[in-house]
Length: 283
Image (cartoon, one colour):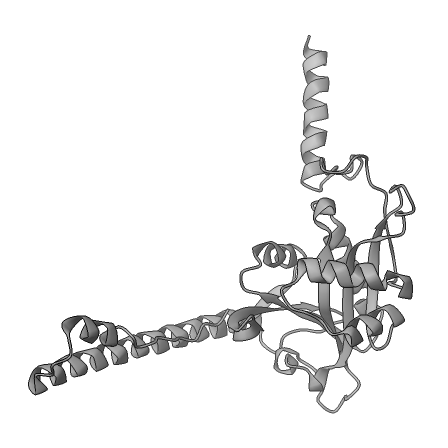
């Protein structure tokens, strides 16, 4: 009796480990797929152009220019990896189900130069900037995005002059934020109004992954202290703005009482609540 229970517990434990990524002997299976996928990775090629454009349009709120896609499929200043499912029937075994695109940039010309500790006289140090990363919805939760990021890390690590990988994530994309944190990327900044989508501004998080001895110019303690100071300054700025707005409201109300304006009470209240409030936030 005990042996039967032990066997059942062993199978259950193995299954739980596979779900957590601890044991890779039992691959995760997406119930939306008809059969177990056979995922492989290769560079993006010209024949992928149409499906690459379609997946970008389906996944991202930002519209990319035709030149971007031409540069990707032809490898013009952009490196890329495609995920395909070799088990798909009807000639779809080489069709894209996921992708990542990236570009090599000079460290001294990048926006994260101040986040790197390097010799400024060494002008050939580089970074890898991740441009886009996506997986078709029916193939998610299979570790494909993580595998694509590992391809980028492997590539960046193979470049002797490369010191880090970095990227931006829109502030409401919680699944992407969780993924990059799980992959040991560091969230170093929050950029207000970085994206403009359909006339509305959205914040962005800046993530960094150091390679080949690249590191922040600050110690871990200094990074924590700097982040806390930044958050405190942002909070002070927000409180000062709120206090300023309150003062303006009081001033307007007092002025209205003194001049005994004929403006209606309803109109007055609408004007009093029209002041906007903005604050700086740093992560």
